[in-house]
Length: 398
Ligand SMILES: [Mn+2]
Image (cartoon, rainbow, N blue to C red):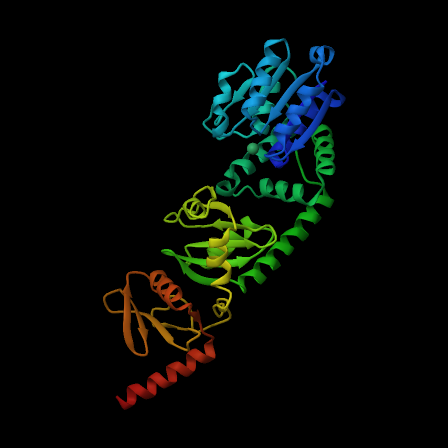
């Protein structure tokens, strides 16, 4: 019997699907959380006897084991057991010292690997399964999703595969994908799945629009943060809210039930792993997270609770348009008016009540300045026209 212990995310289940296609009924799979694996591996070693040891192959994918289990695995393999730990995480590289370790961060073409792509490579190279084009496509989608390469390549199908994975149960997903890959020469979503994905896309879009009206802005340390409460779709929210509000350094997404904060940024000058690090968390430069401790709660929840959400820029205007050389008008909650226009020297000038308060080299900088300092928004055409009329009158009197 083949025993596969894998992660419970898309890449981990991808391993289960590849192994199922290779071994069929001869495979038992257990999916685990990062924290849950070691207990299961320990239990496996408790169960194993001389007879099962002769027949078993133990596979661990997309997860690391602790020191005690590494020792047990050494002992198991040294006394005739067959096992492989296949992973692509930097933190697992030391397992390559052991005969059972197979850890690779990138492949021959210098592309980042995933556990699914490594297992597929391993089983085909060992002659334990035949490569197929449908399976190859599926594996590549998983790899692109897991390494986030899909984002640069704009490979929407990779993201859709993960969306589908979240909409279905693990069993349902595994069965569907296994059958699909077996019966088709190319990997495709069926009509039912396409409909599901379409509905999910619409749902996410509406959710993001609603959350965009709930963003609260404040300075935390040196950074201008956008704060929003949300339980799901953190990646999508971070990306869309970040792009829609480029004056914000990062978006903090609070999950009160889970007592967690996710940080996302679209900017290269911000490292949100350092932001999360200040509160005992960590992650990547553009996506990170931390638990909501007392200090984080005070800064991100308590202190900002009285702040009104950001007002949206007027979006149906014909006259008051962002970046107009002749000028565009913004307003703050304190009813201050900000006028941004292009000066004679190609500089952009910000005026408040007729006084120049800032000069910048681009419109975007000027806008970011008033949005960061004053939480201002682009006013509607009617307000703009009134403003211009008064200007004309004033000019005449002057
Ligand atoms: Mn992975």
